[in-house]
Amino acid sequence: MLLMLKAHADSQHDPDFGRLLPDGRSYRVVPTEPVDTAWHVSLQHTEPYAAACQQIAGGFVHHVPILTEGMADGSSMEYTRQALTATGYYIDPEFWDGEAKSCCPPNPGI
Figure (cartoon, helix red, strand yellow):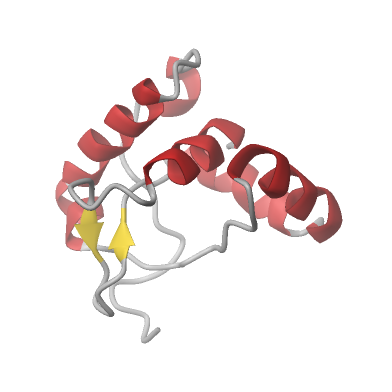
């Protein structure tokens, strides 16, 4: 989950990277099921989560619960793996070999 925060932070300003959300914001890094589970647990502990975000990502990384077309067709994982690799950190296959996971139904109305 921490690697996802780092990958998100490192890629968020790259205009050529990722997919677009319905509101036009760029959406780049998506979790797999085990990473999403860890993220949800972390979100329940806001103070340490906020501190980790600050240290790793330079600011708070908001949870945006949405199922994008890229998540549904698997293409978002291609972008995610590129972002994870670009961090230079080890990518543990136990957590990252899988499909993108959304914790919500398609187009939940955000």
